[in-house]
Length: 357
Image 1 (cartoon, rainbow, N blue to C red):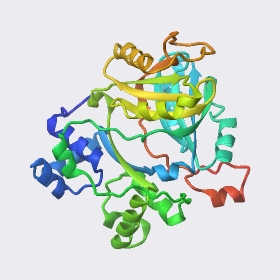
Image 2: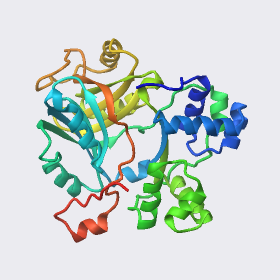
Image 3: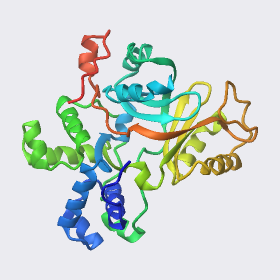
Image 4: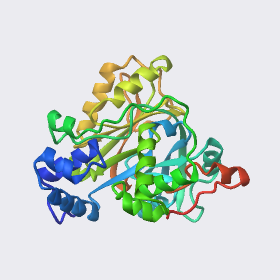
């Protein structure tokens, strides 16, 4: 990725601050970082305009229990990787696309509003005109931790001053978004730092109404925000994907433990030959051996893995691992069929995944 403007320490501090509080005002952040608000706003505009950093809204952890997610590994001819990745990245139900090593060239995350919709999508997940040779699919179960992360560029004292006083999400059972909440989420999925006045104009309401509703959705854990920095600029240009076999009676404990690691980007239960998939940011290929050795030290001796492995060890819980060498579509909120349950019930034979706005 060419970098027209070097990323300096203030840029890193700015991104780290927005990872703590994605919608913090420039005035409040300026006081914490001792930087003029106009300077922070100008720097963020450059980072965002260049595609180096972004803030998005996504369904909060309380809403995730309503969704269904699958992980796809896609095999295609080397000459077709770019075309296939680009086509998949434009599908509204695809959350991310990664170029990987190993037996499969692409790693894809698919999100659907319900299991029936996901099932229909997975029957034919790849458009037939794409030169795809094979697809391996696993359905996700429980998500451990979150899918947010931090650079760690600022100290604990500054971080405490930046953090929002948001209460713990409600323990009540989540309800599907109504049309107005869905429209608000999709608007913020494009730009999570949009001003209330701009959101109100887009949604046909008042800034005060948008502010009240967004505050309610955040307090209930139905909407969350995350700030990302392009991996090469963050110092972790690679992502290790490990497909793990964990004793069933230790799955929850291990999942929570791995999700808490600083390098963790994803830790999710899956249904298949393995039962846990974890992703970690790496600074170099050499760190993969260290990562797997760390896993081996904390794990009991697993049952024998099955199937062909890219990486295997009798003392490791990893059935196999792959490295992502490029992000074809960084994780962003899909603009697809979140909570389109009414339309889904009206037309049960169609996935009903509208095109992105």
